[in-house]
Length: 498
Image (cartoon, rainbow, N blue to C red; front, side, top):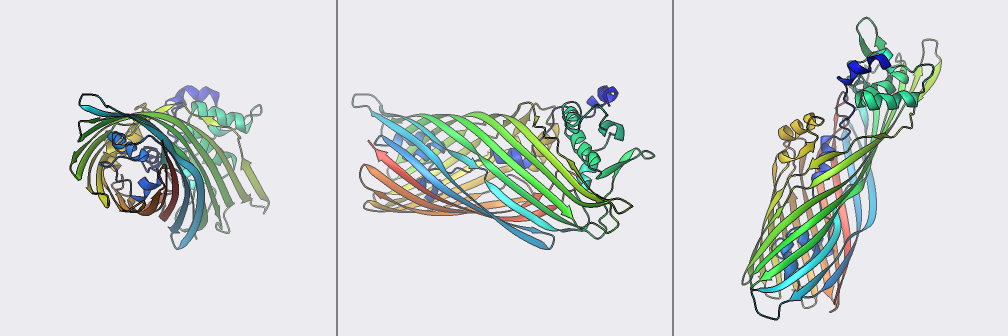
């Protein structure tokens, strides 16, 4: 095996793309879980301001504040996913409670001369996207098995490359293959060592020992957790009476972990393979930087807003662990259970993701002290996303250009004020970044609030619905399941004025 390293280094780069296009999209997308007032009005705050989560839409909004204040928000996120796969369906639920937003704003009014009436400083931290999701896909696949995934990863290799020498261990060879041959070699190594695939010397290729002419039962479980937290450092001014300008300097914190379990059974009676269990855990850590610029203009009761969100420059790194188990029967009827459990953490070099920039145009009508209605329109071109180093992620960047598109999203919000009591509602329509595969999502929200004077309490409830196709593996076994997801977010915010 060692003698072939020089040749195979050209075939299998040591840096692999452990992330899929879905993962890059998930990291780049904003799905803000902010304050309860922000949530209840659909996030349509680009021309309003006066809310700590609103500065994440338009940084000029902090200059609208009159009083200093602190705010803290709590949320419970319940996500339900129902899957449809061939003629079967399955359902899964997941709950997550968190402190999702907190911050403060300090207002400094100019009581002297000059055109700058007010300067405000604010800091805010909130969940920019929550990755918590759990779903199960099960059914009878009459044409594909996971064996095709492993066969697809075996091209260019032979049995000698995937063998374990007398003075070597499975863990040592698995680690060695990952460092010098790459991801594909590790997958085919596990399949070969578990006797799922065998090598044909005459044809110089691997073949599967699994037979499923009558179909195979599959159970695929995905359990994801994590977050994209965004931290705003904001400065804004009120210029004269009707102009507001602001800037945010943002830092981002990424944690994303996905545990995948795929089990197959009920192979043909004459199949040597009787069951397959494959497990893969992918963990991504990262940090990012971005900035925002914004402005608001008042015309009596009418307001317009404009804001620019720069690309977010992420630096990420991945870790994976894997496990493969097969049950088989030989020609003499002897049953075997073969387990390949390297217990090796694959740690990959850092890489960069540049998320796309976005523009937001906003308008709002403030009807005295009775209430308001607001609208935000946002444009984001996901085909401009970049993964670096480019030579290692050439395939991903080509997929981004060919499969992703420019999106136009809108948010609509309203508020009715009855003295110290407020009633709110909102609607949000988010266009899919994909040209195909994933459908648009929408959300409805409502909420209430009460102003006690120095303290305000707000409550919101938001429902997000999305339908999408999910592909089981990136190659070989590429069948898709249809997923219907419903996300219920209940939030409570407490504001202290001082």
